[in-house]
Structure formats: C-alpha cells, structure tokens
Image (cartoon, rainbow, N blue to C red; front, top):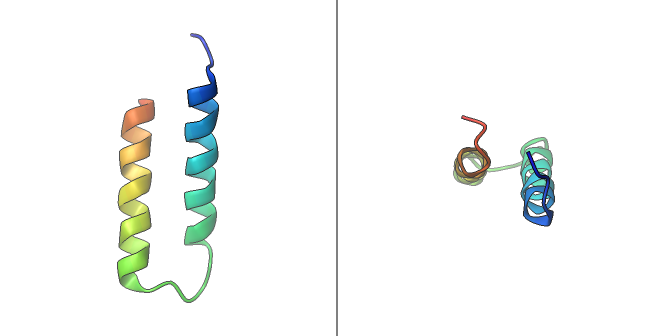
Length: 48
C-alpha cells in the first residue's frame, strides 16, 4: 500500500480532532461535532 501526502494530511487532521476532544470545557454540541468529524474521517481513511 502506498502512503501519500493525502494520507498524512488525514492522519494529522484526525490527531488534531482527537486532541481537541481532550480539552475540558467543550460543550456537548462541540463534542458531538468533533466525534462526527472523526467518524467521517476514519471512514474516509478505511478504518471502519
């Protein structure tokens, strides 16, 4: 399997989203939005 710049970009976005989840003070709406974005990105990357 070839590792591309796009793969790296998706990984960095995913890492950033997961880090954002660790911040205290997120509203439920923000948390839900981040979780949804993580699920979409993981699906796009074939993690599901």
